Length: 181
Image 1 (tube, one colour):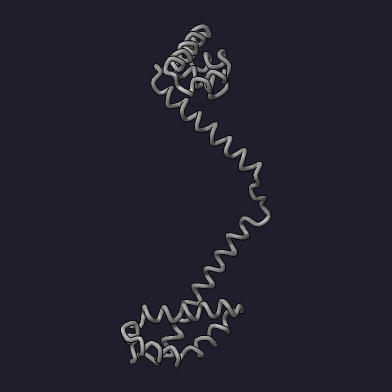
Image 2: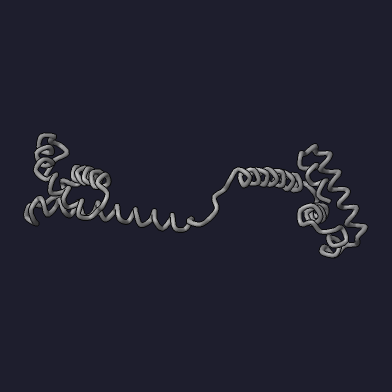
């Protein structure tokens, strides 16, 4: 059946079967608008799959009901997925303007942090390690020194050198890192 090649044949096929297909769909869905949409989808599917019809395997209407069953089943699956997704977010508070503002602030802060980390990559390992522990991990200089197994004076010197190097690089990250100690 080459309905997609012959508009007159498709029109005759459509007129001959549309009422049966509509009854088939209406028995399976409760919404008349959805039934009309699904009926249209079924006939679109017929245009795409008309070449699969084999007269020896059954009547046109039986084949058409098979197409209709597939289209209606796909709709039921879609509806079930949507209901499941809706139930997952049900009862959860949606973001309001204040939440969005805080989210933007976090993104901006993280952008600054990414810049700081990028600028810190150019530092010698010892200076970068102290700076990360103090500025990012919020340790005191004494805690950073203990973590690295160095003297506190050494940690202070490395921190000072790291900050100066960032300032000299004129990085916007320097201001961020400076304010963290």
